[in-house]
Length: 292
Image (cartoon, rainbow, N blue to C red; front, side):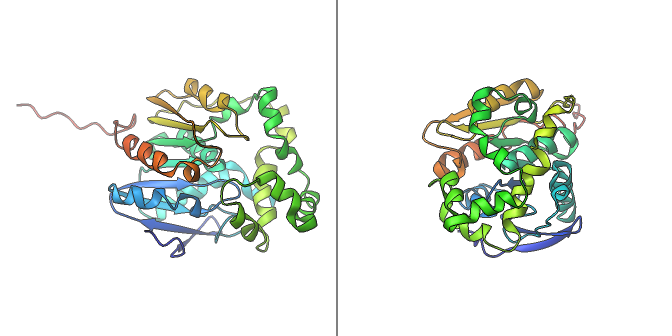
């Protein structure tokens, strides 16, 4: 099994990005969300590596062993996408498969429609296309109540830490790597860095801005959603099909909640192995046929 503590570090965009790498073959980038790190993918990394892929799982800025800037603007989605572009360039990767969960899925969507020639296949877990989330239903708004709580710098941090991190524990419940999250968020600057992802990208003011058109996603795309997800409604993933011009596939995993890579590791690994490389990328270079 891959040693998740054996990380490399690369300097990109004035931050240090730690990452785990395993295997050889077509590159796959695995992007985690809040409040995770590359450790989220500990089951999928060896499965994909054994399946013939070169797997790179970074700790995104603000998480794990990567740099944790304290400025809100340091976590705008375009900035994070630029981190991924710079990371792939440093590693000599031209067109990877990109897989994301939670905030990592949001970054993966944005990477796919902004960099259509620099992505092969796209797989997104839990979080649908930002175009769907831009107009959430009242059910989704209710499920996302915590995003509003996270908008108050200093106050949010104090409330989450108070009484032995009681509110943080109640929000997280017993899902994901809940026992690990407390240790990770207690690291210097980690809690503010994680909350700044929400402040930079999901502020109430953002809803007042004119809706922008999204370029279509041309890459073959796989959407995976867990039926027990309490944070994201199925509408987000199901409605993403209209933003994908390439081949679209949707998989609903019944026995999983929000943290699908942990709740159904074998199912997720099999879905990814079956999907990645199963179809020609929409942007694949066409070679002229040889005449017989």
